[in-house]
Length: 219
Image: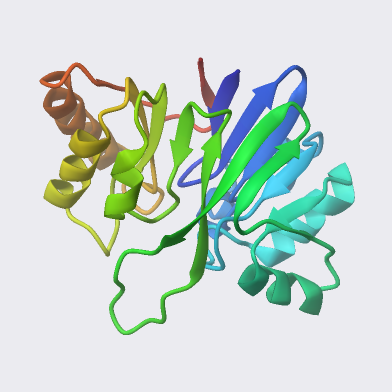
């Protein structure tokens, strides 16, 4: 499996020629480094929650028009999609087969926000080996053991580095792929990633420093 990161929390999981796009949000397209045409060949799309940095409706409509990919998401996002005339497959809890991927949908709670409602959010366990908690660091997620990869929020208004590092330490995966960094300058992202890498190395966790749009890793 290959995993491509396209700014902030936008990822593409590729397996056996099947491409699964997750959370193409507004930050992904904000500076023109990534366009909707980048995702014209995806086979399916997952949206974890309704926040604009994970769901960019105008660009999602373009991606679906280009690719014909079905969209999998929860009820709250589904309401927003219906208003835009976009069809969706409901995915809130349980195990789903999407192409060659086996996805366990996990209801998770978004980290607390300043003066904003908490959205419905869906975390993902992919093929039993990759945990994508979206914007959650719930204690229940630390019960997932022997993971090959944790996809981890690394910068956010709702968390500091101590909270983030403590969550990663509890999950203790083999590797960590950082996300949720699209609002920071490149030099700052690189410096914070170096800090995380040094921290997690003490627990023999490989923190993968992915900083360029479209850069990929292989599992």
